[in-house]
Structures are given as structure tokens and as C-alpha cells.
Image (cartoon, rainbow, N blue to C red):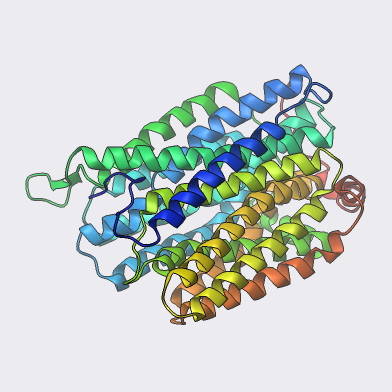
Length: 477
């Protein structure tokens, strides 16, 4: 059972190195966050401040429901007695569901409304968390499927709602406003992840997991983390329902009202634009590498030489991520385009995998683990730089009428990459080499985004996709 997530085994030779890096990152994160705070010479107007907190508070609650589950899914399946093969099948089902059903979910979001889709995310994830109480393969499989669809909604519909609310309803055309909110969105997500990890460990440690009346229903232990996730998701659902107005993508009469037509419109939009193809490639390569990293960092740091306290290691990762988000906010506020910043994210990410891959080749020992860990931190920094950059670029380039559809279409090749990596039995050094090549490919793909600013790209996108945007329904003021 989980103990203190910030306590190292005194016998672990890597303990002092992990602790030193944790406190160094703590200071650096605080300094960057302070430097990136809104300044009096560039204050947000009242409408922008209102949108900022109207969006961020529900987002933090909803994303906390996702973070609370992550550290305990594999451990819960093991506690139920499932072997590695069965657990792998459950994980694969989640990514496959996200790939297969996520596209339809995005199309429904554009047609039925982004607010309703965010509410659907909460409901689906609550259902997924509820299934974790049952030591039944097929009940858990159903939970993985609903969770996969919910994940697609989380990483598409929330951004879609924000961009449309800012531009279409509130008339906020200043590019810095959305960029700043995106930076806070991903910075705060990392901060939420740290608190979620700590609170999850506390909840898990309250009482041991036990079967109810000897049946498949279980309570306590790892199930408690999912109960806590249900609670915060209910809070997020209430906030979204009370604070947000509805907005839509494109809606037309007749045949255009079906999902197939909406997906077709999204595919057509991507195929007609070199920039949107580049966005799909960069999302697939970077985020595919990121999810692959999620499955491999734990065994990479665990061996006969050292078994770290994963609570502090995870917190250090999140602080490196927050440093990247603050760096984006600092540099973008000084006029550096998101297209340039995302190229920096790909460069740092590739460097991180290169350093870690070389470290894995070295002989077992202190130097090898320090090098691997340093590479992981650099990659997490690149993630913090990537997500607000990517959100800003997509906010400028993706046509409003098919925004959620395109966002979810971008996740199809990404999920395919993760599935191939999970199902392939290859050495870890090969895995990191592939991730290095994927990030290099992502960096090359951004060559078509090399305009001076994303604002200039928006003009081209508006001209090319004006027909697609015609007929979109604007919510009432």
C-alpha cells in the first residue's frame, strides 16, 4: 500500500540526487511562475479576466479527475489478480476506444455543443471510475472504453469551447489573451497533478481494499482514489453546468446533420491544408511519444541499484512541466511566435530522449540513472512548452465549424502510434530511439508553420475555410 510519496529510502543511493533535483526544481518553478505573472503594463481587461477564471476553475476540477486515476490503474488491476497480458489488453482497449470513438465524439461536440460534450466527459469518466470497484474483466473493460472516449473529450472539447467563447461570443481578438490562458491551463494542470498525487496517496492509505460479502465488489485501498476522482468530477460537472454558455461548430440542414458528414468535413479541411496536416503530424509524433514515455519511465528508473520514491519523482516531472509552461508565457508575451516555441519543444524533447537513451546503454550505476533522469526532466520541460504552443497554434488555424472534429481526428494517428508501441515487444533503448525519431519528424513537420506569427496563418486559414465556417451556430449573447 502507498506510503509517504515524498519519503526516500535512506539506503537508496539515488535518494540525495532525486531530493536535490526536487528542491532545485521547486525554486526554479516558483521563480518562473513569478516572472510570468500578469504585469501592470500588460493587464488583462475585465472581460478577459472573467473568461480566464470561468474556464480555468472548471478545467482544473475536471482534469483533477483524470490525474487522480493515473497512478493507480495498473496497481488496481494487479491487486485484482490480473496478469500482465490481461492488464495490457485493458490498457490497449482504452487507447483503441479513444482512437475509434473519439472522432465521432468530436463531431458530436461540434454539432450538439461543446459544453454538453464537456459535461459528457464528466459523466463518462464517473462511470469509468465506478467500474473500478469490480474485480471483473469485462466490467473493467467497459470502464476502459468509456474512459477512452472521455479522454478524447477532455483534450479536445474544453479547448474548443474556450476558443469559441473567446472569439465568437466575447470578441476577444488579442492573441495574447488566449496564449496566456493556455499557459495557465497547462501550468495549473501540472500543479493539480502534484496535489492529486498527494491526495490520492492519502486516500489510498486510509483503509485497505476489501471485498464486499466475498463478491466482485471492492471498496477501500486503490478504489478510494477513484472515489475521490468521482467527487471532483461531480464538482467539475456542476461548475461547467452553472458557469458556461453553450457554443457550437457547424450545423446545416439535411444530410449535413449526420455525424458522417461532420467527420467528412473535418477530413476535407485537413486534406486541403498543409498547415493542418502539419498539425496532425506534430500531435501524433509528440503526444504519441509522450504517452509511450508514460508507460516506460517507471521501469527505466527501477532496478537492483535503485528503487525511487515515485511520488517525489512524479512531482519533479510536473514541476519541470510547469517550468516549460511558464517559459511559454514569458516568451510569447515578448512577441515570440508559438510556431517558434513549439519547434523549441521538439528540440528539447528529442534531446531528452537522446540523453536518456544513451544513459540506458551505460553500465548500471549512479551515473547512468542520473543521466536517464536528467533526460526525462528535459522531456517533461518540453511537454510544458509544447502544450500551450500547440493549443495556441490550433486555436489560430483550425476552422471553428469543425474544431472539435479536427482536434479528435488529430488524435487518431497518435493513438495508433501508442497502440503499436504498447503491443511491440522491443527493448527500452529501441523505444526511446523511436521516440527521438518521432520528435525529429515532428520538428520537420513544423516547417510549413514557419510564418512570422500564427496571426498571419489565421488569415490564410480563414480564407481557405470560409465555406466550412459558414452556417455555424453562434450561441445567444
